[in-house]
Image (cartoon, helix red, strand yellow):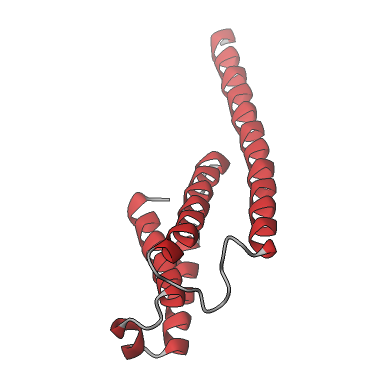
Length: 134
């Protein structure tokens, strides 16, 4: 995934989190809620739709960056005076369950990515051996 696409994903995710935590801002009051979320979700789906095959390792690192961004934003926004309307808060038990599930999912994906890299390396070595024999 290109870095420009990833940047747009960060901006959209932050827009959702900012709208939730700082709903009293004038910009949010001028944008209707339902259309805002529909447009953001459609844009996220379009941005996440793979246009070419991305390696599992690249996908792992991108997901890790997005998850870290979300977690940091959830921690920092209350410190800046925001209050989540839907209850995103580090003091909620569900928050820790989400962290554990995210770490579990990321560790599984990392293992699959390492296996893919190892398979690709084996195939590359096999091809080199075949070319040397000819």
